[in-house]
Amino acid sequence: MVMRSRVIGSGAYLPARVVTNAELSQRVETDDEWIRQRTGIRQRHIAAEGEFTSALGLKAAEAALGSAGVKADSLDLIVCATTTPDETFPATATRIQHKLGMRHGAAFDVQAVCSGFVYALAVADNFIRLGQAKRALVIGAETFSRILDWNDRTTCVLFGDGAGAVLLEGAPANGAASDRGVLSTHIYSDGEHHDALYVDGGPGSTRTTGVVHMEGREVFKHAVIKMAEAIDKALETNGLTPGDVDWMVPHQANLRIIEAMAKRLNLPMDQVIVTVDRHANTSAASIPLALNQGVTDGRIKQGDLLLLEAMGGGFTWGSALIRW
Ligand code: ACO
Image (cartoon, rainbow, N blue to C red; front, side):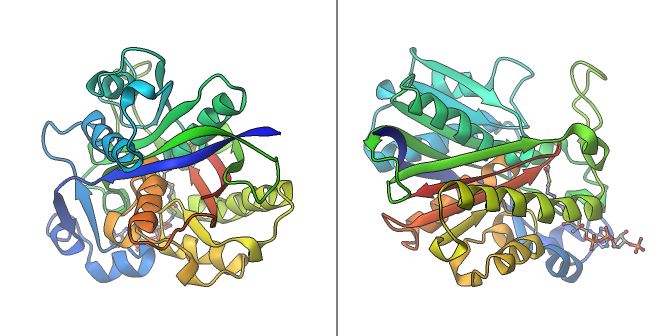
């Protein structure tokens, strides 16, 4: 007998304002065709002035709680993955906790950039497995638009804002791959590749926020290799094969990377949840946004096997297998 973290709710939120590729091409030297061909992105949502990461995360959290019919006072834990916290401290998770009217348990942030949701899921799952939490909210929330140089066409066309959340609940299970819930999480990092993807500022160095810098080709190359390794590890750990996967729910950075991963698994693209065309790369929010999309449009059903994978700055990367 083991304790599994079952997903009992999900939710998402996107800011109202949509910025198309055509609109961006009025600001920097780019065009819709270049962006779509290289990335698959058509548009992104951008937070309004004064609309902070905690506000996005709160809306996703409320939607996840609402979908499960659960009140915040029954939560033990909130883990928020974000690279764009409202403030250097306190954690954005505590802002969300406060706005949910929750004054017990613990709330903290996890920082692993685009792998943040897989990291946060791993943390919450381990709390639940050990019996230290019964119900946990895992949120990915970003206002990435605030750390972009809007005059740098190599980065500003790639990202967007948004938030997603899942609600986990501990449930006893057999310890088999047929169990419902989080079957495994695998997280990794390697600081050697710092210079390929980083923000040139921070409270402890420049006292400023800084903006994103990325060597796109270098990131692309490592992303394919590293995520493939994490996926193999996830399947091997659970004695499963690619043929067992019902849905791939990848981090949404670039359609070409997503297609490469699906091809490697021999998974047709109609078994892959794709949102990068509408949301662009929302960093830690991209997987829970995609998850919620698949759930609300009826594609992801109870008992389905979901494969999550991500890679981000650090480098950080990881995978998770969830039976819905
Ligand atoms: N519009 C038009 N032209 C552009 C643009 C643009 N927005 N951006 C760059 N170019 C130009 C470049 O200047 C270059 O021109 P040159 O040949 O005259 O020098 C040319 O297009 C090709 O540039 P590349 O960078 O080689 O293009 P590439 O095919 O590699 O595509 C991209 C770039 C889309 C960034 C790709 O490398 C990629 O997606 N990489 C992975 C990014 C990723 O996955 N990030 C996830 C992690 S993000 C995180 O953790 C925060």
